[in-house]
Image 1 (cartoon, helix red, strand yellow):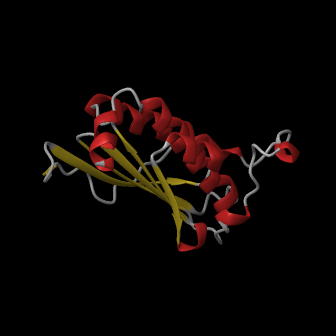
Image 2 (cartoon, rainbow, N blue to C red; image 1 turned 135 degrees about the vertical axis):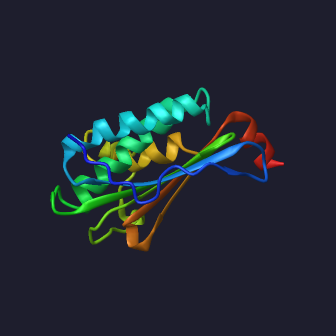
Length: 161
């Protein structure tokens, strides 16, 4: 079973846009079995708050992929290591930051899974999915941190203006 450690609990606060924001900082142990219960619980909150209505499945898939990468590739499934998750949601958007305790990687060296020579490869699709499903994805601190952001449809239109 997943262990949740609240670093700072949910704190509604006013936004310059409109409506409250909630910010959570959590962690889980680096075990594959901890991923699904962790994602399921956070996704219930995201759905209930309706931060990105209609886009929850995209967020969930990207979130699962990012956690799997952190647990498997970052921390090498070492249960003594933690994966740290920050989530911030509010009217029209959700942001998720995932940090592992691994050595990092160069995202530029990840092969394109859509290239003909990589189609049958069993690895390399997670980052592609994250970038395809989320509006913003970036890697920081040598690849040990992934930042993802999803906007609700109207927020994307406003952002592009």
